Image (cartoon, rainbow, N blue to C red; front, side):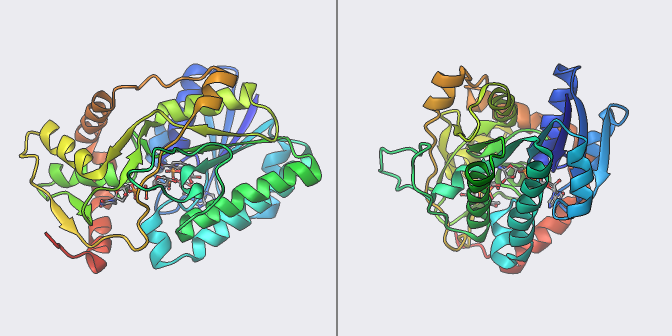
Amino acid sequence: MRVLVTGGAGFIGANFVLRSVDQRPDVRITVLDKMTYAANPDTLASVADRVRVITGDVADADLVDGLVADADLVVHFAAESHNDNSLSDPSAFVQTNLVGTYTLLEAVRRHGTRYHHISTDEVYGDLELDDPARFTESTPYNPSSPYSSTKAGSDLLVRAWVRSFGVAATLSNCSNNYGPYQHVEKFIPRQVTNVLSGARPKLYGAGTNVRDWIHVDDHNDAVWTIVERGEIGQTYLIGADGETDNKTVVEKILTILGHPADAYDHVTDRPGHDMRYAIDSTRLRTELGWSPRYTDFDAGLRATIEWYRDNEDWWRPVKDGVERKYAVTERVTG
Ligand code: NAD
Ligand code: TDX
């Protein structure tokens, strides 16, 4: 099977490529990645002889057409993915997440190619801390940020292309991923690499916001499950019952690294900061038989911290630049 993986040099896409090469000898992968600041080509170095890597834009219609013509399956991970960046400059989010997805959809429509769309639980907006509800496939869309609104728009394009043009697509909306190769701008890697660099973790606002953590390998196994057994046109929510508030995550990181649990700073809150995400993945579990393997968040977090400790060469070159960018707007509040 020939698979075109967009965004395959980013966090989740690269983990998908590495795992697929390892576990699926029948799969031939081409990566299409623009190699933005979020990509790290080194991540794919170990599979350079098994994977074709094309540097290019998912919104480049001619390039995309040729690559889709040569593929049996497209898995679309490429996106501008960081909420904080979408607040300082949304333009790339509109271009990549909306126009890029549109460009891929037109290509898979022309070539009759199977398409899987990777999306986020943030399209559903947020929940109150005391709300017993969790997101399901029928929760109405209510995105809050430029990032999540462009992801929501891209999901709606996919649904329309299925209904109007018969495109053979499935969609998945996953909760917050953690694991190796995640960019140090994101919450867990930022705090881990802060502590490893002798700096204090930075918690937005009071730190009571809740995220529903899932290990990246569980996400990617779910993606293959949906590609192989999902019903065309359907959406599947992916989550591993990992609800944890940010303050607790920071305290766990500090404790695992041998520091006092309260050795962190509260900093300026994110504007419009979503309070809580929570996924009900019953459909994926009962209809398609998927279940997560990383059910112990502490163990997964410990392994992830070990990975960052052992792979400083991978993250050190970009760490200072990320912190300088945060320092422009971030102030310690407590
Ligand atoms: P990431 O930012 O780590 O990687 C994104 C990759 O896409 C990068 O390699 C980047 O170079 C590439 N890219 C960006 N613009 C491109 C363009 N125009 N053309 C081609 N390539 C381009 O992101 P990630 O965390 O790996 O997220 C991957 C996907 O998963 C995204 O669609 C995101 O919305 C979704 N998602 C992420 C999470 C999470 O917790 N990180 C959770 C749910 C869903
Ligand atoms: O330094 C920080 N301090 C902090 O308290 C950072 C970077 C984040 N936070 C908070 C904000 C969030 O409540 O931690 C939580 C997680 O933040 P991010 O890692 O930026 O993730 P989030 O905004 O929840 O979005 C992530 O999950 C859903 C991904 O970046 C998205 O691509 C995905 O769709």
